[in-house]
Length: 89
Image (tube, rainbow, N blue to C red):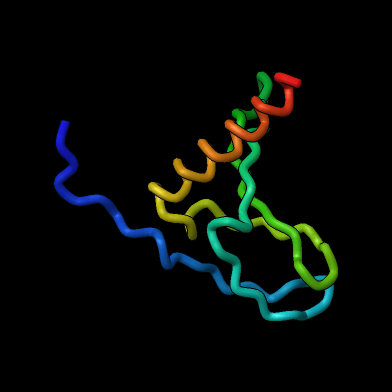
């Protein structure tokens, strides 16, 4: 299969003000981690993208609709690869 045009996500960033220390942050793709939360009978599972503030270490949830789809795939692959290596030890 040939890729005719691939989305460019190399310069993606997300601006956020930390609620813990009021620092203005520019979150980049390498800062984001992915986690999938299993659902149950009452509610479906969901994806979560997050990072920590580099000043006060507060947890920051990054809305999935602010992250391009290609970048979401890359973050999921990077995070899944890292977590599978952890369990292989």
